Length: 364
Image (cartoon, rainbow, N blue to C red; front, side):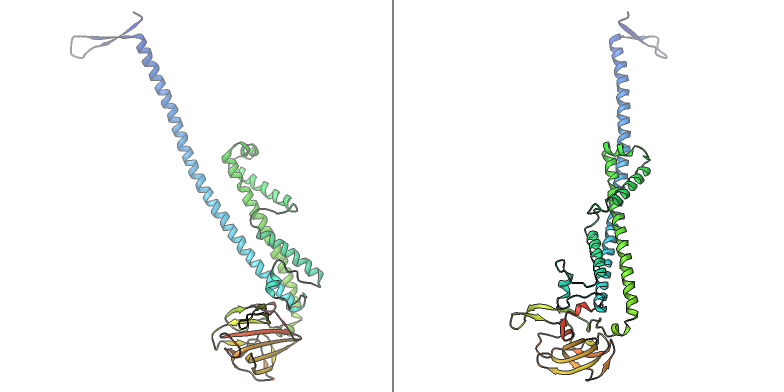
């Protein structure tokens, strides 16, 4: 009898009682399978719940990473903008030093060559030279991008910033202690903590930019103080572009448009419409106004201090010999007179009779 189980079915209104004999083996097997089914169901339910949590976590991390990447790109754009500002201020500072005599260089060389990495301008003022080299070094370091310091001199400062950001990330995830171990074995955690490198690099570069800007501001302030005592000299310095247009040919050696041979071009060619006003780039006295072979209608100004400016190929002259002009006064109009390939202004600056590159003086 132990080998069977009897199941009795008693109908509600019928008299007969039905009984079913089930082998004990099948009953135990049914119970086992029933329990196994619920165990498997529980495991599957638990795994499904974990998957749902993981999907939510992954979605959250993707959103967070996207926002972080966008922020990093925005920071890079800010760095690039500040770098361009610094380069512009640095160029302005160099020009101010040149025109005021604080920095002596060979002006017979093209200003474009002077700005190239291979050129090494002479500087008789050692203190200013050292500052310029320091500025250039810092700017070149910044232009390398957000990759941390390129030498070991600032490595300790960079590592300090990186450790601070790692600690901040750990606190955000509630891992004030033991996070160094966590990031070593957790792939997800290691990726998160890798952001500390980007954050530290940005802060490091930003601090370098602030230092450069601060140094430039100090230098420019010193130049400004110097210029207060050089008012007449500055007014006589040709710092304006004399005509609106576009520079079609720079100072330096070039192939002649007529002979094809390489010869020295002693000024700037500024293309523009015929009739475009030509203004005096500084205070001066008209020492020539009329036609000259090859140059067409030409105006020449003497600004004192050995500085002279020449304006050639003009349509007409608006000034007379011996006339005093102020900076910004219209002295002629762009034309196409003389030996010219098209409407333009040929503009020269001469120092003690020697042509120099006008870009050394132009500030606008």
